[in-house]
Length: 400
Image (tube, rainbow, N blue to C red; front, side, top):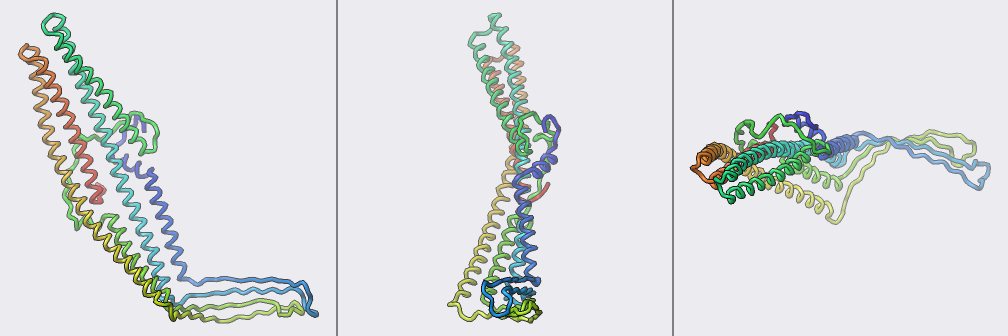
């Protein structure tokens, strides 16, 4: 992606597509799908066959030493206490949960992509602000140098400006390093190893829409983690059925046949035989094992319900915190922009006054420091708003 323009929407899509976490979630979906199909097969009859061939070492009269038998068997479970149906439903619930897990991971990676994208944008603005700051101080340093050479200012004034210039250049190096770190993370999410310059289509100075606050009642049904929690309850309820089924009567019906030699095998002739088999298994007494197994399964249901109730509270807290951060960062952004106008005007006045001999170097330096601090605050406020905007979309499970 080096030197190629990329928008925030394109970047999100590529990050999600190349994310190992999302890929692993997709593997989980495919595994759950196979498990669901496997569980459904238990509703169908099964066909098995047993075969036997043997030969003896000692002859018994005129009989041949060898003997074989082939016994195919078709069997269908008619009733298993609802255990097969419950296990199949559990597998379907597991597949649904896997789909929600993938959606949850996609939301997380979307937020990670936004954060990385806005970080690079913010670092670019920081570098621009720092470069402008260095330019302003260098211009002042040139002027002070000239006046020092003419004997109009003291050496102390020149040294103060020189020290400020050195400090600004040092900050410029640090900002450059932070930018490279941000680009590295940006490219790493894309699966690119280099730290080459990237060209962003979007910026944190672009106008982001004002989000409408969502109610918890609207958020909870569409959150993937809530869907997973509800699925866990349904799965636990099916486990209760499975636990009961293990101690209920089971009925199977089968047809079996056999093709084998006579015994003893006097002529090598074979014969066919068959039978209809009805199997009934009736548990009678297991020292209360059924009661304890069902009680344990029902305890799992209660636990999953408690987890879901706790998750509802967590979602409400996350929404409240996310909205508060969004409002706060928006207010800071508006305030910082107003302050930046004042600081810029103050810097212009101080610089003009110094040129006219009506202000000191310290006045100009103070105005410059104030300007860069407020400029940095403005960038930081815009970055915080962009991140808060992305986080609120994640909290409310929106794609906007």
